Length: 160
Image (cartoon, rainbow, N blue to C red; front, side, top):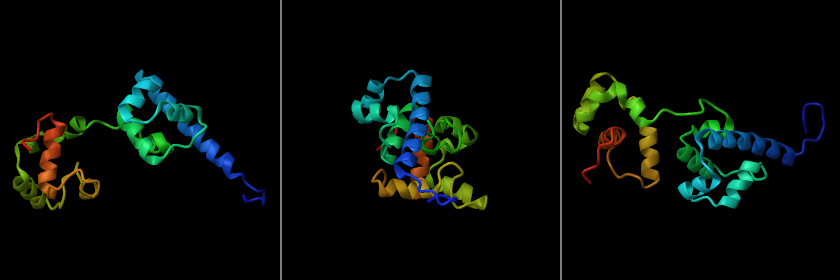
């Protein structure tokens, strides 16, 4: 019930949320020139499911939102909930102030940032690293993972 004692229909609430997402999804697709087929191929989400998302008839699951956002280079929080900026900067754009870190190994990175009174790199936090471990994306120790991410952001290939 709402504040005036009226019964609120949860289907209506879900529908409004789906429509908000649908509008943001359309903005991403049309703004980037992608078709549903492009997004389907790039994300592995079937075209009929994408059509339901675009039409607002189905509420997307969070993993699909993340896949779509990654593909169209949008902020997943903006796409899902209209929180934050629409577009996130790429790692390469973010890393520009840290170009000097590119030639440093794991131990050197740790020493540099620990001497500055920090326990993690400003761009690559330990929460993201822990999530990567949980998703089986890495088995690297934190500072080695940071060095790898810096190299990737600058287009360098991993020796592994």
